[in-house]
Length: 489
Image (cartoon, rainbow, N blue to C red; front, side, top):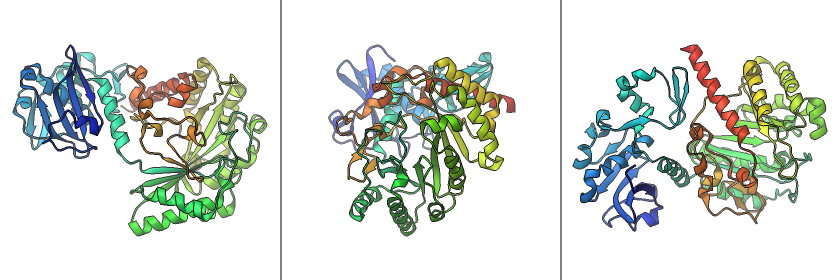
């Protein structure tokens, strides 16, 4: 970036103070500013929904500094197929217009390798775009156009903080097409590490309360809406589940919309009548949790055999069954035994619908977490055994700002009529989050894996939980994915 010049974005109301009154832009537009000291010297208005540059303006005395190129270069990283208005001066500095699209003249741009390139031999993986390129370093100059279009080479002026501020703003201005209902904070189990163990244990299922929550949720439903059920143990309040699903079925039919369901349950209360109420694959995802093989698991929460028996019932009504395996220093040595047991317990067809994941249990009062070396050893064991046929590592995807705490709208609804932005805050009225940009982890910006990881959970950071489990999981996931690609090249 040019010395002394900074790029930044402002909320809609503040941006209006710096934009001429004749300019038309809405709260959903991205407004990018270039500032020299305290003076605004350029701005760009970008409609992210239409991929359209609505306006670009640079103060005349600064046009020789190519500030317009800097602004457009950053927007190009968000969407390489932009539409654009006519603006003579920026077409002279590295861009031209073709069929109403902004086309960069790569030879006129100062390009550099993206910060988010992860190299394995001759394979280069871009964690921001998800592209894998098989190329030798001495060939980079030959394929500049293609490498720019795939996000491998980017404009040297790009401001990475602006890139992630853009992603945060885009998340904040879009109404989340999902909602989670906290059906109860009661549970029929008493796991020692549960973060909800000190909650009030109330169950609300009166019709008036259910209707009130449904009215809130129905106002945000769009196509492909996702409704999640959460607790405590949500199946302690089955009547509420039936109520909301019936409402959603009617609403989706009347409005010709698609929807799916999600649920986190301990798996102990699954009945035949509950399973028969749902259509096949009406649930997109249901998650259960295991704490080790039978003897270990039953010491922590009990019902090992019943949970696994019920898991086969759940496979009839969900597209994916997630099995979260909690890992602590007390059960670490038994996890391999659990994986071997699950390998034999489920059929090959069942495994295709099961997504295994590791849960890193942390309690600030008790040292429960395993070491970095132990965690890495376990991941490598999983990979070496080809995941025992389960769906474990997904293709890495850009997951910037996926946390609900980064959105200015509540997405968690409790039946006592309270609303929350984060599962960890449900029932906690003394720890409200006002600054929703808390999830913007600037300290991680330089990490090559940041676009996939999205940074640490803000609550985990607040509790000073170690970051390395997530760091190792992400890095090993990418390495495995790239190696699988290499085998197929």
